[in-house]
Structures are given as C-alpha cells and as structure tokens.
Amino acid sequence: MSSELQTLYDHRFDDGNQGYRQRVWAALIEGYFQAWVPPTASVLDLGCGYGEFINQVRCGRKYGMDLNPRSREKLLPEVQLLAQDCAEPWALPSSSLDVIFTSNFFEHLPDKEALGRTLREARRCLRPGGRLIALGPNIKLVHGSYWDFLDHELSLTDASLAEAMQANGLPVRTQIAAFLPYTMVKGPRYPMAFVKLYLRAPIVWRLLGKQFLVIGEKPAQAPEPEAAQAARRAWRDDLAGAQAGA
Figure 1 (cartoon, rainbow, N blue to C red):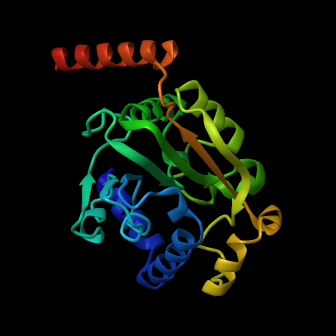
Figure 2: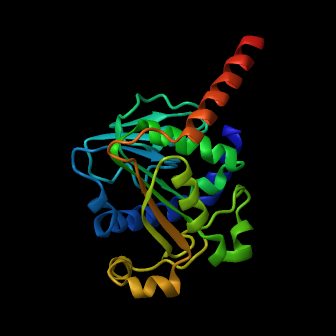
Figure 3: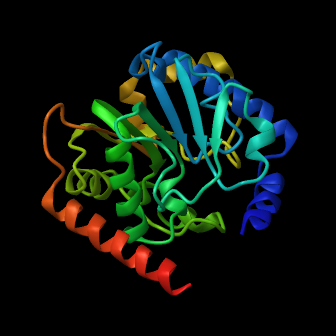
C-alpha cells in the first residue's frame, strides 16, 4: 500500500504543483490557521503528506503522521514522523498534543469505523482544551467530482463529521460548510494576494468554498463518553485476540 501511495502522489503532486501548494499553505497559515496554534503548542499534522502545513506552521513541537514513504524526505528535521495507520493506537502519550490538524485526509479512510477509531485516538492524545482542526471536501457541494480522485473512499459533509466528533467526545466549536475551494491539484492557480484577500472575505466563501472546516475541542474536564469507552475496549480486546492467535 505504501508504494502505491508513493506512485499515486508522485504523479498527482509534481514539482511545479508542489511549489504552488507550499506558497498557498504559507498564505493560509499566516492568514487564518496560525491564530489557532499557540507558539508553544505541540502539533500533529494528521495525514501530513509532504509537510506543507507542519513544515511552515509556528509551534513548539511538531509531529506528522502518514504512510506515504516520501513524507519522511519532505518533512523538515524538526518534524517527528509517525509512519503508521491512524486507525491503530498512536505512538504518542495521552494528553500530549495541543492541536491536531488534518486537511483532505478523512475522506481517504476506508470506512466510518476507521474514522471513529481515529477520532478516539485524537481525543486521547489531546490535552484538555486541545483542538482538532479538520478540512475536507464537502460532498454536498462537490457532488460527483468527489470521486475524481482514486483514493477517495469515505464521503463526508461538515454535518456528518461534526456528528462523528461529538459522538467521540470532541464537541464542535466551529463548523463551516463552505470554506476553501475544492482542490489545488486541478483547479486554477490564484495569485497569493487573492488567497489572502479570500480569507478576509467570508461572504465569498459561500460562492467559491467547497471544503468544510470543522473544529472540535476536548472538554477541559469531562470523562470519555461511555460509547467511546465501550468501542475502545472492544477494539483493544479484538486486537489482543488477533495478536495472541498470530
């Protein structure tokens, strides 16, 4: 699977496109996302890809998680790579992260069960008050073009992701159905001045936005929901059984 990912993304994100993506992400971070990330924060970029976000955001400690073998060579030395399946237990201590950021990643998960396991790991690893910031294509707005990418598996809207976050102990603080345009791969290449202006004009988001923005927050003092506890116990029991039988 990892070699297939490398081949797919090498074709999709060629060097010319990669330079444009880095410039866009620099503008997005400076114009919007940096305000959500304290300068001393521990940040995980979930599905970090080639590191456009985690390499450029200003924070105290940086992690990236991805199965693409090329991620390691693209990340800066200060970024610790977790080369693992996000639906498996994360190699991070509980309550060790301030921010988890993910962009155009959840739609690549195979099913809702994998999404639920991922969200429960996110909750475990976030400190109380920590945030999960999620961007992704809103299938209500992109319709059939959602399937133009071979590795899209799980169809989501802002409402369905918000419901999943809530069910797994991450109450939603911000929910925007139409935020950014759909894609930087096949779409037009806008001047950076336009990107910066776009971020300051929410009324335009309703016209051009095809990606949702959903931000969930781990409660300051609240137990894990019973449903999440039960799912975690069952999952770990199944995993232990499988390992014992191997």
